[in-house]
Length: 146
Length: 146
DNA sequence: TTTTTATGTGCAACTCAGTTGCGAAAAGAG
DNA sequence: CTCTTTTCGCAACTGAGTTGCACATAAAAA
Image (cartoon, rainbow over all chains, first blue to last red; front, side, top):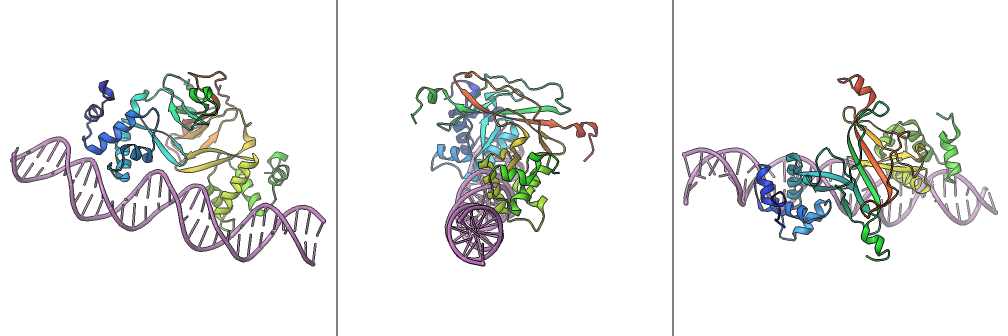
């Protein structure tokens, strides 16, 4: 879980000049361990009952977003989903995929979707967000599973 | 406001076989009069103080979505935004544009973004949602205005 | 190491979009 | 006009996220 330096919680905190506290490390490790964006509730559940207060998790995520370590990936079911920023460069566009069967969401950083460089109908686009819905590889192979 | 038949509230209700009540007509007319998706709060404000209860607006929107008359365009600031379905065909992909300066959102139905027909990395995509952020035409012309 | 100080954390209470249950009202059928 | 079904309004609730404040602690200074 601490193979590459940029995938180590303490290293990330240090290079972002953020205080390294137990709650922050725990939140960061939850995001590192996940293969997709997480909500506050999912992070709290992953850390377990001895983890930080949910307000603390919200504030930690807020500070991570401000520091550029974490990004607000998308909103679903009225809940914000957070992902590590290093999973894909800031200005590059990557789609988020949600499986309609198993409900899991993951980001596809290797997929590069073009964003219009010139204005479209007079609208100057500076940021793009793409959400895909459909069937993930495992649900396609086992249609009735899960 | 009632120029084209498909843009007339009563006609829309009749062809969708929905009871035509004052609250339904008022909600539909708000959406018809708007150039972009609206929240329940915006619809209620547009109708005015003598309009229906907010719970009623939610239920009306819910029934409109079920009937295919209205679509949930996107979620912003924790609020669902609704738009008329006839503004762009159901399965075609159109981006929603939000201006970072004036905050207004509109959909660009004339812009057709390609959706992958074949699976991408094993993920079979059946629906796409695209959000653009940037400067709208009027804010580009008057940078400090509004 | 100890002290100091700025920052982070936990708790309780709050906000606000959206939901639910239920009795009253009104639309459409006969 | 009457009956049945659907819709509406109200009040109370839910759940994600926020705020204020006292306490705790990481990092800086002594």
